[in-house]
Length: 134
Image (cartoon, rainbow, N blue to C red; front, side, top):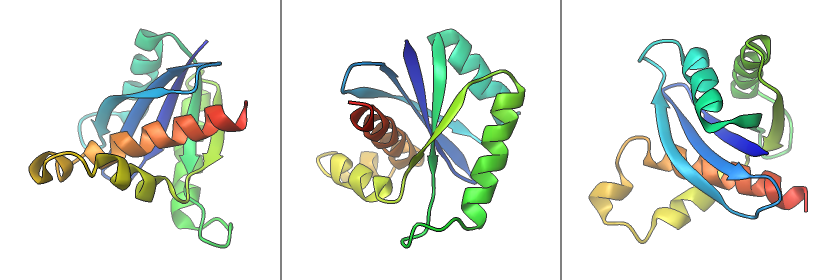
């Protein structure tokens, strides 16, 4: 089964894909939140990729509690479920830092490109999910 990983932010949604049972995820770019309906865009992408599950990074605070951003993410995930997608969450507390480290080898201009960090964070979220499932 294919999996779709999302790093849901206010401006962009980073996207990654993976096969269940495999340890690696691959970036699929990002969705700009201002370019139409982001739920519709994710539903279309999941259909195109043949994804049976959407893994959404849940932004918890350092102590593990949920804040406003987690509430926004849960509302977005609920809209995905209402549209017919199966959704699971994974703790994304340290994925942005990991994503930044993974992008360190890129030239500065490419590394600072809007959306690049969101895509890398989606990859880290999905790989974290895959690792937790063995």
